[in-house]
Length: 160
Image 1 (cartoon, rainbow, N blue to C red):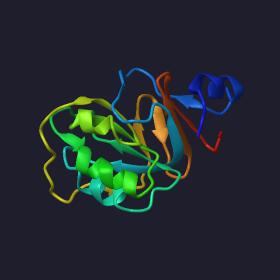
Image 2: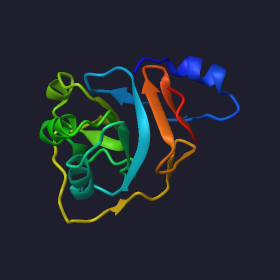
Image 3: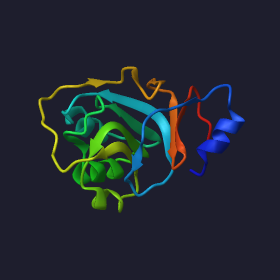
């Protein structure tokens, strides 16, 4: 999948939403990725992230509302490796990751607010496939998200 979010915005100005107000960092091996939105809402517990990335993710991006916490990582190398094996295009986390050197070598997009070496706690909590909001955008399961070094955008239908 080849695209530039700037061009997608120019060509679809009336239908895209742009995530704003947050300083995203890209840690994965893919600079650009996109696909159908699948969501998880959790706080410092990556049980649902691990569970979801263990399923078929072909053509999909997991968008996680981690409450913006940078105290615990919601994804690391082992969960990301599993996501690659299951065909996920990428992961966007309103929260933190870890194992950043290993993530950079994987064929998956990983964008988070930052990194921290502390693993997540697992309490088997979190919600799947609900509307989540951060960066001024509502992420709806079944819609589409595109991310590259220019930013993150959503659209109600596939643009690429």
